[in-house]
Image (tube, rainbow, N blue to C red):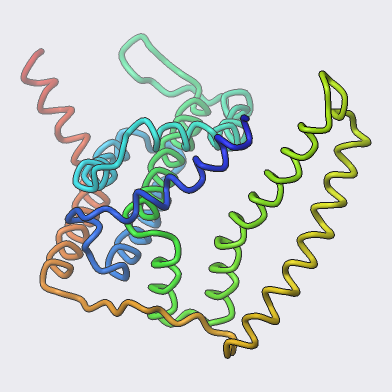
Length: 269
């Protein structure tokens, strides 16, 4: 069943986060801070900047390799949400028609550069965020946010949202299986059946939420989700953070791509 396959694919990202590599063993607070710095650095580039973004492929490439994360899996997830970025920038070449000289005799509309910049930034930011979850796990990221000072209400809501995505998916899977067992051919696939499924799912969700809430109160829930595992920042975490900070500063404020391009241009011409 297609829904079953998609359901188990959701948990694959979480299973990847429990590997035992160098990246997985880093302190989650350090990984979270360095990832946020990377995202803000990439976003800070101008809308026409494309060449300056190429060196920033190194950071997700290192996380991907050192964390032993399958490249096809990350690219597949990025491709699923890429239509949003494409829709945002697809009209830029039509709206921004100023001509920019790329090579002698070759000019392009400035909108093509802004469109390429949007796609490149999207690729870098989304892939890095996915790699953070794939090497840390979403609950661990939430606990890192709590240790960094975010309100417990916000962190608890994030944890509940992530945890009960799987619970809701299980309920949907049960309902779909029950419908398939009672249907023959194309029977049971109309809009009326779909509306009934949504209604049943809503009622079951409300009832289950009440039961879970009362069970949590009976076990002493007071609005916070304490972490069982305690983390401590070691020297390797500080070295990693320092190297990432230097890497971001160098490639953000120095035109390394332009310097290398001129070097190779002079070398081969």
